[in-house]
Image 1 (spheres, rainbow, N blue to C red):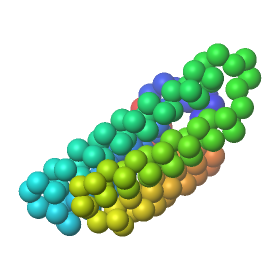
Image 2 (image 1 turned 90 degrees about the vertical axis):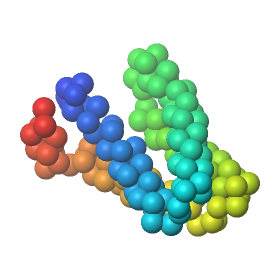
Image 3 (image 1 turned 135 degrees about the vertical axis):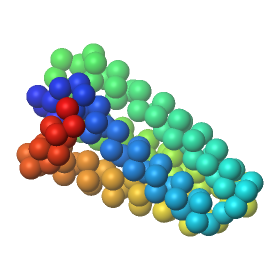
Image 4 (image 1 turned 90 degrees about the horizontal axis):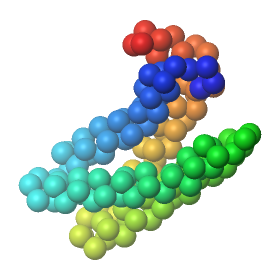
Length: 133
């Protein structure tokens, strides 16, 4: 994302969470009615908030380090995703929600991360984002 404007970086950075939320809320709408749908959406929101907080160490490292290593950020992102998976699975188990929801969440994030990496590393995708900004 080197050379991106702030708006382009923000757009690329929102691809993963927006798509993940859209998929997960669609899954909830298809599988649940009423209270269960609400409970799952709340747990998803709590877990995603905790996962976002878990990204702060890498953000601080990137802000402070003179030449930050991208591997530190990548490791922090994967640690955050693993933490969210474990926490969502734990919370879903307490509520009696199906066990497959956490792996579906994990798979959705990994697909999105692959799309994001492709867009960040492939100049052809830059044209998609330039049209919006």
